Length: 469
Image (tube, rainbow, N blue to C red; front, side):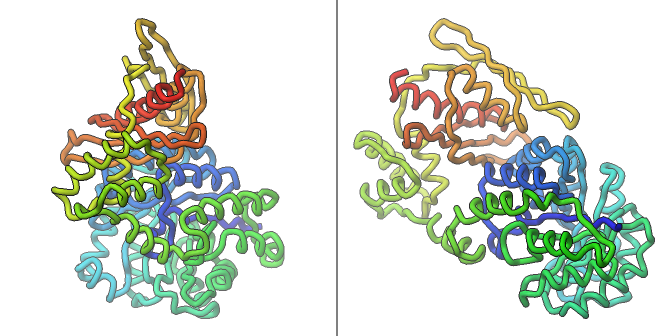
């Protein structure tokens, strides 16, 4: 029985291309659900920000215990060393070299000639292989590539160390029988030891049929989506393989007994971003709502926007937030939802700190569970917290809760660089929910973990002060 590897790209596809605008916390939760389901590969987006994206990849790498974690390398993106430093702690790391292989995409997206793309793929694949044991070459828009060039670039990638080659029908123009023929040709030119992967487009609503045609033609790995219609459906494809796979001598390792329950949880995660809206419609709606305030908006408009974010501000806090908003809006054309979140975190409920951070020591790696030891002071008393978690941030938050003696619901977690360079400052905003009310904390540090810990503690101090603990 030949095994078909299932790779999930739900998290990888951006909202502008039909995907979902997941938060930091939701991406980690999604990765853990896919890992529990037995999906072979969990794919993330590229590392475009050394701080925020690298932290996300590190957190996912720590949270995923069984599945491979795949991170793409773009031709003009961050170097392999930067991506590998974030991925290296994964139990099964995979680096992906992604490149367009059709003339139209090479010239208009990459602004490179075919020969230059081929050489760059060869170079990048060799660099990735020197760092990571598992390397995949992803040929975008393979359905419109010249057969001779596709063969040449695939051979170059394999010679440089790619153990998996994936061909993508990015344009979505191929019918199932045409995709079958395309995959059959690719299988013939690949060495037997190289895994052949496919990604089918949902443009013509034939992604599931094309995926099965590809498997019958010899594909070893299929990219799916647990939610969304931009490629083959994870749930549908697994059910087809479990029901009819034996007829074709194939099977997959996804746990079909948990399939409906876990995909239902993932669907609710996706629906939280806009109900029945498509990914593209949701992205447009979020873009419109993200830029809601200008210097001309009055106190009522700011309070309404804050309520939309979930905050129930007192009259005094509302005035403080509006004054802080006015100072920022006078220097900017628009103030977005994330910026308003940060304003509320810094201006509302300026509580005296009941707990103060004194020190923290965090241990994390690919063969150990992340642990965090935090020491805080409460008055003259020193209190220590030691906890384990799914990644260093989760462990740190648990350690703080151990010290305080209460668990808080994490509503949102945002992190971004506010200055540039190697010593860039990172800003974190944490939103906690207690008693049905939202509390926001803000932390700034050159250490990403430090800013997250300070933001969480800031929100906790506000809760403790207001609830009189």
